[in-house]
Length: 135
Ligand SMILES: [Cu+2]
Image 1 (cartoon, rainbow, N blue to C red):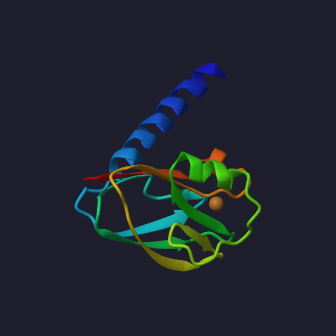
Image 2 (cartoon, protein in one colour):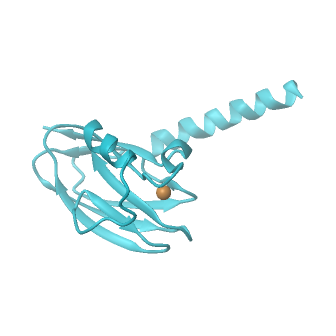
């Protein structure tokens, strides 16, 4: 059993490393298309310029609800224990019905932010990404 598992693990790690490289975005990007598929964001590391509007088009390709919430650690701590099933029209809190596409525009101060789906168990499953705004 152990002989079978080790090559599979190596293969999985190689696939993860390849996908991590493929999902980085250049720091000049102001328009981003993002897809949610199998409860994962297809972009998990994004670099954008600080101080200019960044427009995100987020496609939920799954047959279940998701959300895209972006902010700092305090923002996510609030949402991890929050009880809002659906978010309003705040640009940093996007609720996505099954197969729905939404667009939102945000301007970031220089820094590092995370975007997370806070539906039960989705963050632990890997619905997390990093955005770096470079000044
Ligand atoms: Cu989700």
